[in-house]
Length: 380
Image 1 (tube, rainbow, N blue to C red):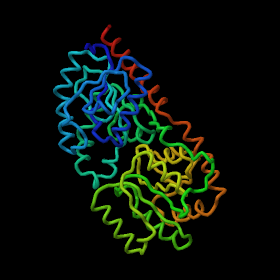
Image 2 (cartoon, rainbow, N blue to C red; image 1 turned 45 degrees about the vertical axis):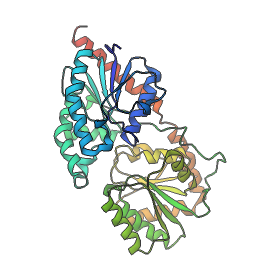
Image 3 (cartoon, rainbow, N blue to C red; image 1 turned 180 degrees about the vertical axis):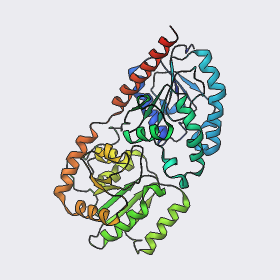
Image 4 (cartoon, rainbow, N blue to C red; image 1 turned 120 degrees about the vertical axis):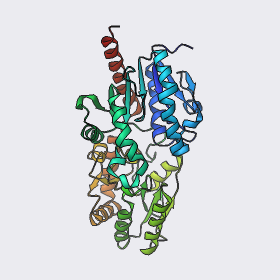
């Protein structure tokens, strides 16, 4: 099969059980595939793209993110050897990298997506990643003709940290899956659960600010008989410290830790909750905020990094460093049905402004701009 003149998609970040960056890649490719007929996708997990028309080129499973640092090293080796040769021989119009990993060759027109610079903001929790972001990512982005950032907050970070020209970095917001996240058909903000709970969704990492959330919840619990459900997984030592904090505060019966859940189970959690509490200290985008709003769930989140961009005026915004303010915000939302109904309505309206279709349209336009500019510079 000839792939000359096609858009080569580097989907090596998709593993056997995709999460996070893998799901971003899958959703983006699915929508791009509806818009374009010139994609060719390089992946070790072709089954993840079931139904996509574009040809799938199988690559070694050694590159999968499930394999940790070894997988990361294999992706880097594959890009600079096998994929570099392919790109030169096949003459792609442009290459799309859905994460900041690219072929270090200026002759190959590339567009690279950066989701966040969290390893630079929180180096103590990303000891290995911070070195990659400090020394390799700057080269990756300078070898790319255009850079896509998930938010204006990330765009500013990229320009400031790496000295890129502002016009070289474009914001394209990710979307969410409306088939997976949608409101209760009853059209009500009253929680499904008979035992009310506030919900946190996300990884268990220090920058997610969960210790302060638990402190704030302890204050709330003295006033309202509500539970806290924490859905997510992370580093065992940090998860253990959170459980110890819960035990020390005497909240064993009030706080429940859940692991990762599939989309259907997660939607059930959103629908059953009184509100989502997402007090993160830094996010490249903050997908749980969008998913919760799409389900009609009131949201409390931080007024820092990208989160105000995502939530707009449709959430209660707090200082993530102030446990008292967070506790008061939870108390207002938990005890006031009128506020929950207002946040529900505003959240549904806000969520409707984000879609993978819109993401793909914007990315497709950037791919064409880069390809056309490259053709002009080569005199084609």
